[in-house]
Length: 361
Ligand SMILES: O=C(O)CCC(=O)C(=O)O
Ligand SMILES: [Fe+2]
Image (tube, rainbow, N blue to C red):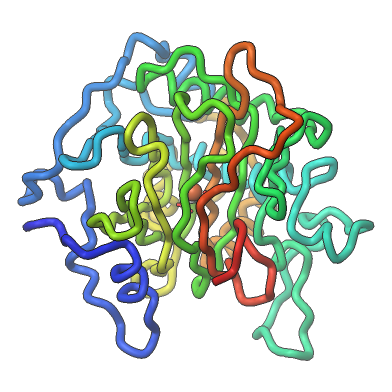
């Protein structure tokens, strides 16, 4: 199968349209790499960079068992097929819904409601959504920023606009990036995007970080996304890729400043949870799994059955993406002058007017 030569804008419109469902067969799934994608090649990660014990403590399979791929024509792009244990995926999802949206971390709701409460405490509403049923804070989450908080208006990070980066996510990020050959990566900022099934993320580059020699790490959880990766110019050919729950993408070097976008979220067939969240490695069941599995899980990343109940209901209709970035390089500090704006033209993420990055077309 040949990769499409269409521009990112052409593909964005194609996959976004709702009136005629797009043909998803041309979306590249690196899991099928063995069956007819000559452009996909295996990448051998540095498995000695992370010990089995370190991997296990973060809920990761041993690095020697991970499957990682690159794509001809897109140097600097690395895709690691879900390296998490199913149990640990649930933990990271729970952190993204329960812990990371808490103050002092910043989220889209703050602009309208600076006194907002804890989204997790507000829970999920039951019943069908309509005008008479206001959405909970958790349902209204569109983005959360961690560490150096990205300012969507100025498109800058600032020294004063900072809160502590979560230790567990920092460890996970450094560990993942070490296996890709970047031992000096400092996880200093993260943007968590919360997608509904009808959300899109517009075409943009991420170039507001001061040190662009360090990679950008992206973790996907929940429903699958079609991810478009283009070139450094808007009319360069782009490729549509599947990102499934647990998948890791790393963009560095040539790929670090390429245009990219998410034109569509695709729910699991039958409207259920993605399979990697259904299979339980501990109890070996797909339908009657009862949590927690303290007896068999050794990572220590426990979540309770009550927590998973909320997370799993959320994930039926949502995708969560976490991007982790290094903002400052060695010896760098924030300049007084504004840095170049991210080259970005974005559509609203979500339908409630809360905008993910930057400018609305
Ligand atoms: O959701 C994704 O997969 C991409 C997110 C992204 O590009 C961003 O947050 O800058
Ligand atoms: Fe991005």
